[in-house]
Length: 347
Image (cartoon, rainbow, N blue to C red; front, side, top):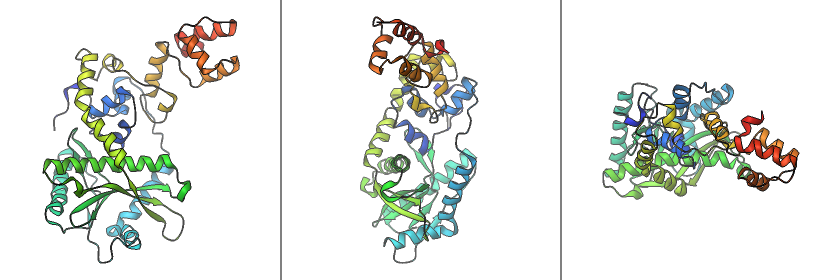
């Protein structure tokens, strides 16, 4: 599969469900452009700007998550099947197809995806086949990203529903809403990939369920819970993001004067939406923060907020001073000078 010419020397990564989901929740044109081109912010930060991007997830958290997910899907997904049988979804013997494969060979990955899609389509056309598919690979048509949702479960006579396994603790009404929302959005990426598949084959779209099944960690004998949540809004936002891919890449090329994304100048020509929330979620956070400070943009984070608070200057007043309002005292004059040329100057 050929990569987009906008990448230059960067490698096409074909962002998975997590990357596509993240791109659909941000207003940052720069992040959306990376997703459209199929390249991660980590690769751009490291290869273009020479940054060292640490892995922010603890080894313990990663091991916990992997162990939980493996425990749910091992032995022909025995625990997952029990969860479904306990909810009344399957009363008889359940057919499980495990497509787990850790190959790094991209051509082989695409071959496996084609085989998996043939199985998925066979049920949509004729019914029957497996009731549950573990780790099914599927290609997202618009940007050729290879997704691998945790599982696919049969619904109705010919339909499918996407499921995700997450080691988030299910605490009923106290469950972390952000984490649950993130899991639903990742499942929605798989749903969108299925929707593109059925459209390509001119099949009814209602064969793809717009709900997602989440398997979450739970204390107690079962050790897990099964929750079904609607994903309609997440599906819509992901579709809109993917539909804008060509437009984003065209605009990026125009802004960069036709230069590819493997140069600092080209990346910096694309607007960003840096904010304190970028730290810990985007590998380009420090790069964009440096640009914002160098350009004299007001940054309400870190030392800046503390300094404003000590000076007794409100956010609205700070914005006015940064925009050129006349200072009324020495403190305001001092802060305005630093805000206008960026917080970097005040360090």
